[in-house]
Length: 103
Image 1 (tube, rainbow, N blue to C red):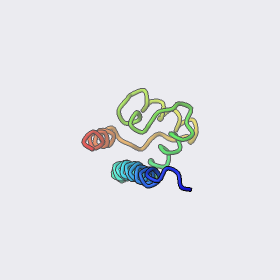
Image 2 (tube, one colour):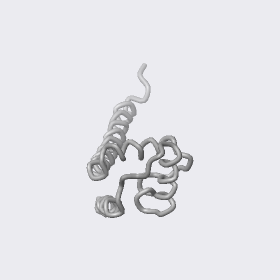
Image 3 (tube, rainbow, N blue to C red):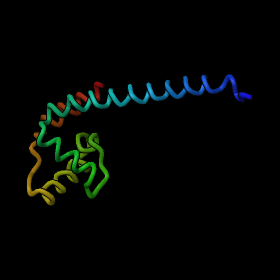
């Protein structure tokens, strides 16, 4: 005896649609940030990823680029944890922020 004869195929299709939408959004985010990664440089990107994952404050990458508070928190963390100032210039931050706003 089979139950829900109509539902399994509909459910599978809906799941696949959701998975596809999630994958598309993930790909967009990856490609968006890969372009910024090239602009900022691999070394600084490593520190930013470390800060976002392990920093004292919970600021996103966008916060670091767009807000003084996020930028200052990142700078303070990098100096405290690694004894280094960020190697991102103000003009690079502006370029990255402009790029992100355009995506």
